[in-house]
Image: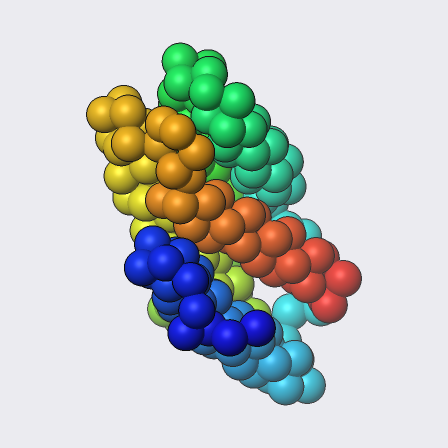
Length: 193
């Protein structure tokens, strides 16, 4: 495929999608580095062997996966020119994204209640990794929520009419990525303990 061919709009869409994929690949590399460091550090004598992840983390996993479905339904509705329905699904996705973040902080509270701290004399390297990786993911979910807010604003303004779905496609791709990334992280922490 010759990437120099096509209309200016097609070239612009390809460039934006490529930039998004480069960004997501760099995030994958960062999280791969942190999970690799987690594995390497697990040979330390002070590593926690009997860690139980908070229940809020598992509930938040279900929430972020459901939010991917609602975002998909928003895009599908807009592709069918059902703008009102699409807007409602986008608001559902926004609410679920906020609920995900709230549940993450509930999970942190559950860990602290079990006596696990991020830093300090009673902390452990295991918990420091878990807090760090989860917090960095939350920062990216906030970026996803900002992106979703832009998509929602553009949706309300009617920008996605007549099949012009590029912004929504970019937003949904990043949102699905965040959901899959969290699924990977929760499974990693659950099975590599």
